Length: 64
Image (cartoon, rainbow, N blue to C red):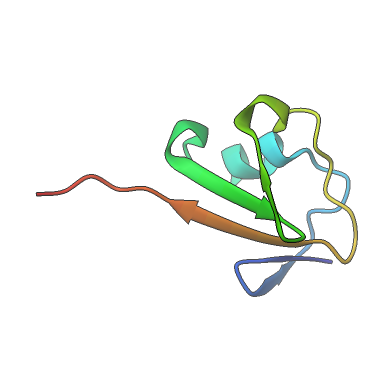
């Protein structure tokens, strides 16, 4: 299992980009931390999630 925003998720083997798409995130509007390190958007497609990974996703929203 992968811990994403504090919840256990069966996402092992998926790329970060795949997970974001499946979960409904817009990659241009999020910041992702993987095991304590910020992940550059340019490597979302190549970054594979593994069992035990801890991911934090922060979504940016507009407002006024």
